[in-house]
Each structure stands twice: as structure tokens, then as C-alpha cells.
Length: 268
Image (cartoon, rainbow, N blue to C red; front, side):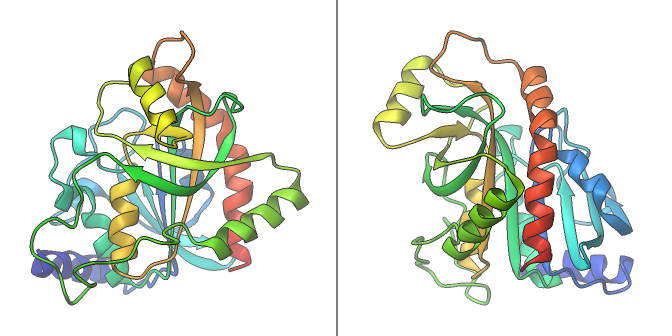
């Protein structure tokens, strides 16, 4: 696995003229338009990258964009990989490993999720303060000791300094933020109401099918993480789960998320 990660990173370095990003960004369902705001220097389709899986989910464009935002070099993933697509966790998290070798110093993640906290409303932005993992841990198996320790600590896995920076920016820009715990499940079914009640009982504020494996692997490698969930539906209501509506709600909230991300990247 380590050899495959290094080979892919070396191929990308060659394809991008050794572009060295400072920030890695993973864009979730309905949030891919943020990638269009990057002053792109190189765009690589996942299908062209050796060793990369291919995103099969509607709303995920499936490409890496290398360029600048607010004068900072970034790499953005328009679309991610999910355990429910049939990929093993080693493949789900493979791009995060590769981005580390490309040089990223921070990881920004976003997702569309179902609200559990009854004070949340559709379209809210929730800063992820912690997570509960209900998926197979991506670090199960032989440890990649060159990249991180066997037993990495998950305290402060969503960086408190970055959260404080986001709070200050949101107050300045007039962006309403929620804060809470993200519950990561396997999917692909939307959760039952009983499952949402369970998630609420164990301390969850919102639930989704991604993000957690990526953050675990990033923290294994010592990368500070910042995460945002767009609340695209309220799970404890009687409304039915609909992927098209998730995409629509994501696009509506993307403008506020874009403002937040751009200001944070500028002020890193």
C-alpha cells in the first residue's frame, strides 16, 4: 500500500509539474461547484490517475483540481469515495494519503448530512467539533509506520484553532453557524427514524456516510482537519430521504461555505 501511495503521488507530481499544495479540500455531495472558484493550474480526472478509484455517485464530478485560492496553493477533490460504493477503506482514504505526500499541511472536508439536533434547519452549516465512527476503522490492518503511529490519538481531531478561526470569520461575514458531532455510518440507505433517535441518544447532531475515515487517516499522519456539514434534511421528521434534494440543498448552502473556506484559507 505504501508503495502504491508513493507511486501515485510521484505520477501526480510529474503530471502537475511538481505542484505543491498547502491545503487539501474534499468536496461532498452538491458542493463540487466550489472547485470552479479555484484558479486552476492542472485538472486531473480520477480515471486518469494510476491507483485511484473512480467516484460512482451522482453529484461527484470525479476530478482533482490543482490551483490557487486567495493566493494559496490548494488541491481540491470534486467528489470523494465511499465505503458503500464497495471500495475497501484503504481505497476510500487513498487520496488523503496521496495528498499528504504531495505536501498538504491542512485538510478541509465537507459533506451533506441529515440533521439530528432539533434546533438545526435545512441549509444550516454545521462546524464538525467531533465525530462518532460507525464504520470499519480505516487503520485496521498493518500500520504504515512511515506515515503515522500504530495507535493515533483522536483528541482534537477537528482542530480547535481552525474552528476558532471559522467562528471569527463567520461573525465578521454574518454567516450563521451550528456546531456539533457528526455520526459516520456506512450507508447507502438513508437512516431510519429509530437510527436517528439512537444517534441522538449517543451524542450525535448530524449523520452521514463519509468524512470520518478521511479525518482518521489525516490525523494518523498529523494533518490538522477542519470539517463542515451542510444540513440537507432533518432526519427526525417524516420527510423522505431523496438524493436529488440533498444535492439541491448542498448547492444552496455552497455559497456560504465558499465564503467561509476562502477566508480561512487566506488567513491560514
